Image (tube, rainbow, N blue to C red; front, side, top):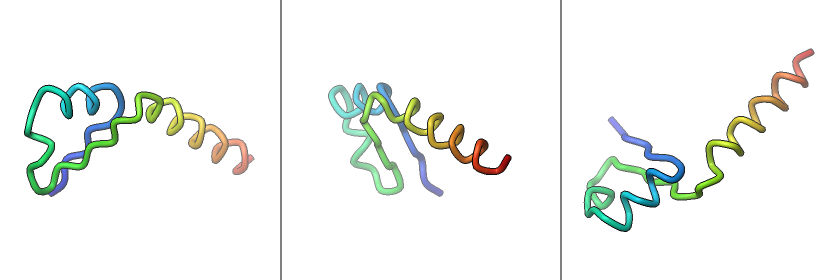
Length: 49
C-alpha cells in the first residue's frame, strides 16, 4: 500500500517530519498540485463532451 501526500501538506511534512522517508510514502510537495489536478480533470471532462 502507498500513501500519497499532495500539496501544501506534503511540504509541511518534509520540513517538520522524517515520516516522508518511510517506504511507501510518496510526497508531492508542489503547493499547486491540487489545482493542477483539478484543471486536468476539467479538461478531460470537456474533451468527453
